[in-house]
Image (cartoon, rainbow, N blue to C red; front, top):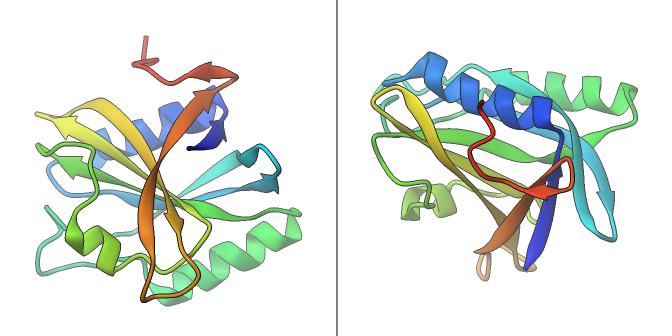
Length: 154
């Protein structure tokens, strides 16, 4: 099982974003550095959800916005460690749509369940595989400032 390292500020920011956009899905990008111990995320960049047909249960980041985020990250010496989104009134598990629309192999996909406007569970999944045909999500442990993630909102 992989490990995703987050700072407390990053963890709280991505959960807060899910609460702010409720009842729609939020989405954003995780920026960090790849290490032998897994991704170390140093920043979170909230993105606009461009889905207009079903923003309550789907998300999409504009390709132009993603290119800008990646360029800004490179200037800071960071890479795209992964993506995050929320599941309003739905568990923090990946869906078949999440897998179908995930394309960044080796990156983490973080999902926060937001129940009635409050962030509850946050889980992470590594997109593993060597190509589109064999890609799969593998559960990751989230460490927040070195401790296993739990509800750290207080």
